[in-house]
Image (cartoon, rainbow, N blue to C red; front, side, top):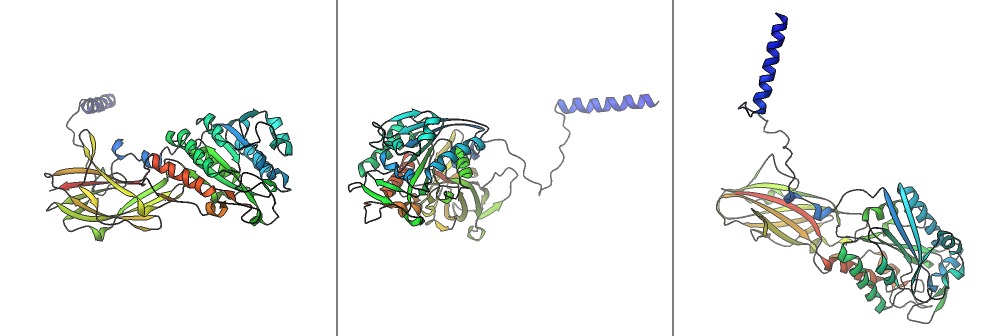
Length: 435
């Protein structure tokens, strides 16, 4: 009898499995109204890839190309008793070895042309004056020759004093734009202050002698230019940023992505009376569901908190431009159903958007995507360290330790990133059900 009961129970279980597999009409258990929203299937409509890019961390392995400006103007950085240049090169090597599982490094000297060097010769001769007096290389700083052969798949590090004439600035910015920015290759820039004892060349006056003291205010800067994976750049800065001669707060990162996180919130007192905020189990992050109960016009305001990535230039949030699109059966189309109802109001990292709705369509449910994008001009402020280190006419008696035309160089580089394509800084979604 015990055996029969067990067999009977087994047949009941088997029958239930068959019924479920064949799509039986067994009612699904009820879900409480306050239960957490169900996970929605992946939908490209809700993608934030244009805003944050690939959030993956740095690569496990890295291939590095290290270019050292070997023009005569760099010689003063090794003539000083406490230069930052040799330690930085050693620390860059160490950072690469400790920051990644597998590393390969190639060494190059550049000036008038680019020459690959063996590590032993590169490191041993670095602190000698002869290193910066090699005929055919040391006569001029041509960063554009480095750009022409740089490989975006590798992490390129360029150490240079950036002394450029006005014409050189335009040429270098143009080369950076053509070789990197238009290809969406991120660019990093980090100034390194150092003691200096040597000749200053390439200024608007004849070469002059300059010797700094122990006072940091007298030090001169050289620069670490970086091209490649932005996560690799950040990891490198994380490691060398522990050194006393590095101020990591001065790291500038220019890439198609400036936003680290964004959060949208309705300003509830601003929601007009004919709009009712509704819950929905399939709402995604930064999405709001509204019932338009009567009429075609309504208004509301939304706060968008935008936190930028480390190193990004200061975003002018009040100059962001709004673009609204409506979801269609074939994709999306630009729309004027939702427009700005006034100027953006900024408070720290927060941006408040006053919005007007005019939905003259038939009753139904409509989906909208609203982006805030950078304008093509004046989208960012320059970091404060740029004008502090820049001079348009250094001389023995005026700003002798400043970098010639640094400000127009960085300004041109920042502008080139915004002119190539608008950066999407924030995105939110509005679903409207018209009654």
